[in-house]
Amino acid sequence: MNKLSISGKVLGIVALLFVAVSCQKEDSQVMAPLAAMKSNVVPMKAMAQEPIAYCGTPTVVMLTAGQHIDAGTVTVGNDANFLYVTYTSANGYLINETHLYVGPKSGVPVNKKGNPQIGQFPYGETFTTPVNEVTYQFNLADFDDCFIVAAHAVVSKYDGTTIVDQQTAWGAGNQFIVSGSWAMYFDYCKQECTNDPEPVYVQETAFAYGYNYATCFLDWGFSRWGWSNAINEGNYSFEIWAAAGQCDLSKGTLVGNLLVNYANGVATVTYSMNQGFVMLENHLYVGANRLPLKNGVETVAPGQYPIVVGNLSTTSTTYTINNLSGPIYVVAHAVVEWEVEGNYSM
Image 1: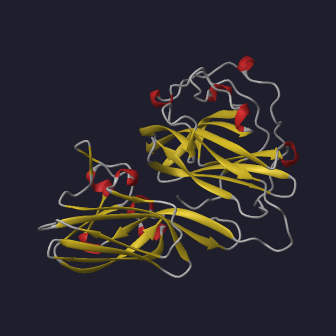
Image 2: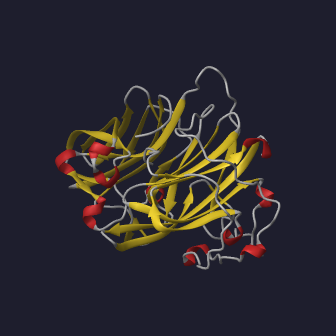
Image 3: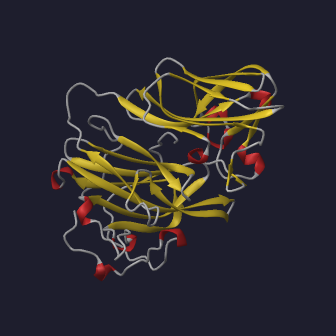
């Protein structure tokens, strides 16, 4: 996930719009006319202040395109009077459309199979000129203490004026129906406002970078960043970089090191975080192929790696992989959290 930028915001009162286009097939959702939208929706309020002075800790999730592409972030936070939901694109993507629901889960408009109908989401718009960021503002008093946010978007990547990739995207969280579409939502609880500033934490995806041993996924034609590291037997110390979109280290944050000992067919891999950084998830591949395989096809999606470990809160983990021989490849991913000062911006 990439850091937020408040430049280029599209703020203000946003009317309910009818968008006569359909989502990508994987959503199985059809846009609905304005008349089909419920009338008991939370009204939009006046323009947001700039910058937003959040109370407590805002929630920042990945704007996930095509189920695994990092296309930016969705940030939800509040001050004493208002709730703010901000879409921010990244990694070359821009926002073409938004569809937003905020409120109790029971109020989400769904079809007979239980999949969300984004055409009936009460907030959304289509941008004639794609934007990098858009913020929606609500009256905080209109919400319960905790509720859900379902943030959908259509994003496109451009080469000049030509669209080279277009994807449907969701703010990452829980699927509404595991066996249904991949539509997602996440929870948010109102943050208390105090005189003392609360710490702000950010979560980012991170990969091990092995210098001359590393090849960026993008160089092999994949649409997400990260590295595969080719090694022979020996001891290695690689850097772990977070938020280094496009494999550009100048955009990223150095969060730790990956130590690899490979000898006699056994590889021992240790993730070690720098001070102030904590791992929440690990995803690791070590093998003879340059990338892990899913049904015989190369994949760079961390959730498809052979070793997947979640629910962590640690600064060090170690894994042992046996039955190896000859040259091998190491792809090491982590979700890393750390505290930042003030608003999370770049």
